[in-house]
Image (cartoon, rainbow, N blue to C red; front, side):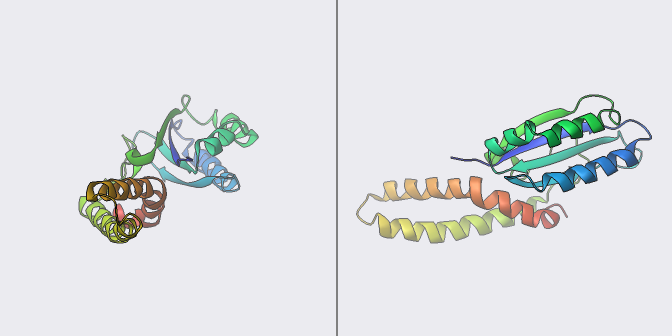
Length: 179
């Protein structure tokens, strides 16, 4: 099964090179939108006077799409272009599935997501899934024991939340969740 994958890239920009880095980043984000399987990027910028660390969160629809990006000429050229603007090689961290629903990368300077808003999103999603999937499984497996129907319902709901609903919903609601 193809599973969306998230890559968190942290770079420390050389002093006085932030404007050039921003221009490089803008161009990179423009270029990657044409890649197959690219789902989007969130950039966490440093606060004024802060440590000059930028964290970019790239999302791809599968590990294969990520690997294609990693081996692309686009990435190779981008890394060559940025090397003079940063203090060292970037720190890369790959995440997938549940672990990145609501967790921004460690060390970012953005506010943490609102716990109340995360709870609201989760309640709405779980409620909708329990009602809809529960009904469908109940009809499809009417003769099965209730424990079996419950297990099938949970498996379907968790899979939908992990790979379909939450990655898309958190992208759509990100501004509201982090407000």
